[in-house]
Every structure is written in structure tokens, then in C-alpha cells.
Image (tube, rainbow over all chains, first blue to last red; front, top):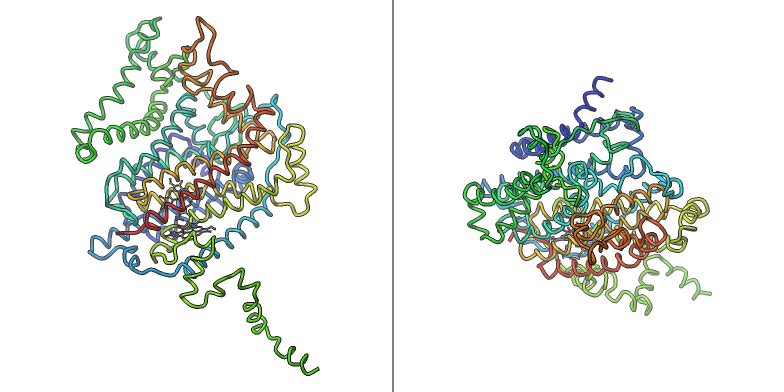
Length: 359
Length: 271
Ligand code: HEM
Ligand code: HEM
């Protein structure tokens, strides 16, 4: 038992968990005919449930999972995979029909119009009743948490933001607050609103499909499932005192120390590569970092336009294309920075703490 | 005597129901009556102010559970539940440092069968999850594509408002959990570029030679909290936003959202 727990504790370390999740996402999409089927769901979801149930016997696991505010996130642990599975299953079914020349599932019924009363109104009524029962039951069983009265002098450890912002708090591991807390949230909002104007693919409007818009769906799933939901789950269950990582069966030890060994790019370049001291002039010191960041935003758009994104460039025109690539590059900067951190302990690409300008 | 006997023998539930349905009061309230025929079913959808959110007829594909997952409607229902329970909570809660925490304790210990706080808190959590899932569904069915681009945008703002509502509400119990969660969250604001005193560019902005324009008492975080830390003014600000400001804006945008669903041709489906 202990060895299994140790293995799971190791596998849930951020670098392994995120990598595994990304691999699972891509492999399952590649072999979607095999993965998004009823059979898999009948094995997968009960297995998840059993896993949770057995884990409850572990004291540390039990403590963190049953914290009242964490209960909805446990629900999310099941809901998000379930709806991912459901929408992909529908997509696979529809794609198969298209291949065989049969009409889409939705199409078969679009011609039929039914009366809103009773068909829709009764469904809604049932939904309302079920939801009310669920909510009242939940409220009777689990009292809302209330800790000691607010005390500005006693900082709890860990101090966590409300759970839905824990993805942003998790980003703080890799980026400074001005990026993780301000610029990226802003870009997420703008980026989401831009989707309908960037994605000009006319197919897949109003029905489930994967094949006709695989690129859009994979991008969205990666952003939503990995960079959003998974980070929230990670931040909730696996981050303890001092925002250190703790496996699900690990005791939240306040004294756990993690060595801070992160190194700036300027250090790597001037000290380790050239073997000299870091220059005093800030701009000279950080020139490599500026080049890297500028290059990151300027070179790929041009290269991609000529190669794998050629079709996009032709279809979208320059304005839409550049906005799209800019947003994608911003989104990709998070996993890229993660990998750089995991592999090279890279702290800042540009580090100018004098002006709070660290990237 | 025989008249009374007649009356009593006529007193079957069916007859009573019929009598009620014929009464002037009933007919003034429910103009169409029980929707037993298709004609009446249509009329009831048109005549009722709440039901007329919906069209008279809908596409069969659109009312499938597996298509919408009901998530938009569930989000809306949770919003209504939150509005109602929030109103009840407002009867007991005073947004000052002196009373806020005590009132929450009273709510727990003095109010019999009090689960309003629980419903409100768990409902709020559930609403955040249901909006995420609703957005997920709309993406997966490609329902943001023309002509629904604008409504997707309205939705994104509704998502942000939902998170802000949840965030502002989180502070109100005024316990350690509340205060420090908001402290962590609002600390981000001080890193706003050119607008937070620890943000990039802040120390480039000066008045004259070296008086900083952006300081801890004049930056984005200060505007949010009404102070340099999460204190009395922050509590009041968050209370007003949570109970009045944000619900009004969200309600208004939901009206736009629902109106646009209809204008954009009802629930999406293959052409
Ligand atoms: C059982 C699950 C539900 C299903 C299958 C469902 C389905 C639908 C559909 C198909 C529409 C679009 C109608 C159209 O073409 O215009 C819709 C819209 C709407 N639903 Fe639901 N719904 C459900 C639950 C709910 C709940 C619980 C509420 C709230 C009390 C609700 C409130 C609304 C509102 C306000 C609209 C927008 C107005 C409209 O376009 O008709 N729904 N829902
Ligand atoms: C408080 C938040 C929200 C409420 C109460 C709400 C409510 C609804 C309802 C009731 C529907 C009818 C169909 C359904 O139930 O799926 C709907 C459709 C729609 N919603 Fe929302 N919504 C909200 C947030 C959002 C968000 C976050 C987005 C996207 C980012 C969005 C985009 C859309 C779009 C594009 C449709 C049309 C879908 C179609 O025709 O298939 N909404 N919304």
C-alpha cells in the first residue's frame, strides 16, 4: 500500500502530472474511436470513483478532499472528464456518420420542431427540481466553513486565493504577478472573445464534430483542460504550505524546504557561458533576454506563415492571422516556461527587478 | 335540505377544479387556462411573461440533454437561487468589521434550520462550475460561429462577472479564510503595469523630478480595496459590488444574452 501511495505521490508532481495529462489528451484524441466509447466510460468512471473511495482511508487525502470548500472541486474532478468524454463521443459518432454519408445526429432532428410546452418546459422543470434537491441535500450535509475572525496579523500558510483563481496562483510559480495576475487574465478574456472572429472555419457550426475542426478543438481542450482546470486542481489539492508541492497522500508539513536553485537567463549567458561577470548596465545585461522574447514573438509568425500555417495565412488574411498567432504564442508561453523551469531551473528570461519587469 | 345534498354530491375534485377554472379570478390570472390542446400550449408560451423567454416551438435536436447539457439553463437557475438566498442573507448581515463576522455566527447559531448561507455558498461554487461547462459545451458544438459571435462575447463577460461575484462574496464572512483569500487575490492588482506600485513601469511615472505618481496609496489595488490593505473600506466596497452592482450588470447582460439567442435563430443546430 505504502509503495503504491509513494508512486502516486511521485506521479502527481507538477512536471509529471501536467506532462502525463497532455500526453493523455493527445493520445486519446488520436485514438478517439477507441477511447471515447461507452465501454471505456464504464470502466474509467467507476475506477475513478473506487480510487477516490479507497483513498479516503488515507488521513492526509481525507483531510484535503473533505475540506468543505474543496467538495465542489472534487465534483469537478468527475464532471469535467465526463463532459469531455461525452462531447468527444458525440463528435466521434457524428464523424463516423459523415464518413458513411449518413446525416448528423442533430441533423436528423432539426427538421422536427416540437412544442416548447410540454417538451422543453417539463424538462426544465425536472432539471430545476433535481438541482434544488441536490443543493438542499448538499447544504444540509455540509455546513459552510467559518474560520476564526479576520486577523491581519496572522497570515495562514498556505494563503490561497478562492479556488477558481488557483490556476492563476499556480502560474505565479512560473511568472511574476504582473503577468500571471494581470496580463494573462486579461489576455484570456480578450482571447476567448476573439475566438469567433479568428476561427473562420464555417464547418462544425451547431453540432458535435472532431474531424472538421480538430485543430480548434485540440487548442481549446489544451487551454481549458490542462492550463485552466488541471492547474486549478493542482493548486487546490497538491499545493500546501509555502506553495510547495505535496502528493495526495503526503502530510502538509510547514517545514518542508525546497531548495531555491533557479537561475536567470542572464546568469546562464554571461556567467556560465562566457565565464565573465554580469554587466552592470541593465540593458546590456538583459540584451539576450530581450532578443529571445522579441524573437519569440516575431520569428514564429513569419516562419509558420510559410510552413504549417500557410493555409491559415491564406484563409485569414494578415490581420487575423497575426492576432491569432500572437494569442497562441502567449498561450504557449506558459507550457514553454514550465518546461524550461523543470529542465533548466530557469527563473527569468528577462530579469529587471529594479523596474519590476521580469519575464 | 335537498339543495345542500345536491351541492355535496356535486363536490368531487374534478367538479371543484372545473369550478375554479371557470371563476373570474382564475381566468384573470391564467388567461389561457390548462394547456390541454396544442393551440393552448402555444398560447401559454406567448402569453406568459416568463415562458415567453422561450419560443413557441423548438428544434428537437436542441432540447436533447446530450446537446446543451442544460448548462446555460442550470447557470441561470443557480443565478436566480443565489439572488433569492442572497436577499435573505442581507436581512441579517451588516457589512462592517464590528458586525460582519458576528452576524455570520448568529446566522449559524440563532436562525432555526438556517441553511441559507450553505445554499448560497454551494450554489455559488456550483454556478462557477456550470458556467465553465456551459462555455465548454458552446465551444464543442461550435455554437460561437456566425451568427452567434456577439453572444459568445456577451457570454465571456458573464463568465467574468460570475467570477467577480464569487470573489466579492468570498470576503463577506470576514473570517481568516475570507480575508486572506482576498488579500492574495487583490495583491495581484499592485503589479498592474503602469497602474500598480509594484508593477513594471510604475517607477517611470513621476511627478516632476522624483515624486512617484503611483504609490501604495494611489494605485490600482488602492482603488479596488479603498485602502492599503483588506480592511473596512474593502468590506464595504465588496459588499456594495456583490449585492447591488454586479448582480445588476449580470442580470442586464443575461437579458441581452437570452434575447440574442432568439434573435440569432434559437438554439444552434446544423444548417
Ligand atoms: C433540463 C435541462 C434544460 C434543457 C434541455 C434546456 C434547453 C434549452 C434550450 C433548447 C434553449 C433554447 C431555446 C431556444 O431555441 O430559444 C434554452 C434556453 C433557455 N433556458 Fe433552458 N434548458 C434546460 C434547463 C433550464 C433551466 C433550469 C432554466 C432556468 C430556470 C432554463 C432557462 C432558460 C432560459 C432563460 C433560456 C433562454 C431563453 C430562450 O432562448 O428560450 N433552462 N434551454
Ligand atoms: C451567467 C452566465 C450565463 C448564463 C446564465 C447563460 C445562459 C444561457 C442559456 C440559458 C443558453 C441557452 C442554451 C443552453 O442552455 O446551452 C445559452 C446559450 C448560449 N450561451 Fe450562454 N450563458 C452564460 C454564460 C455564457 C458564456 C460564459 C458563454 C461563452 C463564453 C456563453 C455563450 C453562449 C452562446 C454562444 C449560446 C448560444 C448557444 C447555441 O445557440 O447553441 N454563455 N446561454
